[in-house]
Length: 286
Image 1 (cartoon, rainbow, N blue to C red):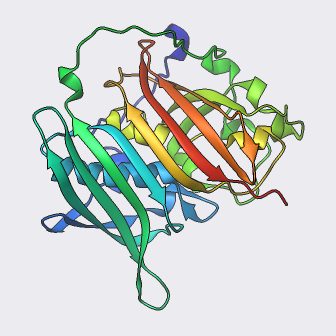
Image 2 (cartoon, rainbow, N blue to C red):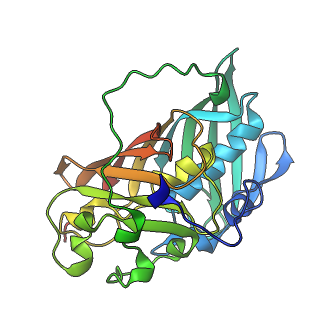
């Protein structure tokens, strides 16, 4: 897709980008890993949920005999903060085509007590072994060309509690979902845009875990502001993404009782649906 091309003088490669460095863990013992959560992936002083999922996803890829995430279900128990953390993994079951494991991330609170931040149950396999047969009614989101979309650098009104993560992403949002940035939200629970990493690193399965939780919340376009913390997030990775920018579409159909769902689809440059997710998030109504 020529209009989606993003030429850069220097592009980071998979394995040597900022995203890779900031999700790298150090094995302390079998199934126990240390990591320093980077402040570069924060939103309103809390670490982004997609970045956290990628951290745990990398730990599980190291633990399990299969390397590719197929499905991950994460429960966010307490807000993670930049700084030291410990990840503990456990193999639940291993099979010929799928292996299942669980992982938890812990940090110390101000009193020195260990607090669990996030817990994940996941199944891993080999995305390269999947058949090519595709039968679907799903279609890629209709997005304007990238040069007709807008990102943080284009002067959109800042959101209270500005986020460091935007400096590490290439985000170009569909103008039709940007009414909130102009003080005129549409009232629709929609958010769409082009997504990539700012250093030009091409997407891989771990980057898809970040992509599903990287756009502004749909709650903004519904006229709500402030933090929208994730309660639970399930991601399905469908295939390895082709090189180039991704297109992400997120919709919310129901906000009730202070909670909303966000359904995300991620499409690659070859027009393939490479990831899907659903999350439940809490909304502050006052």
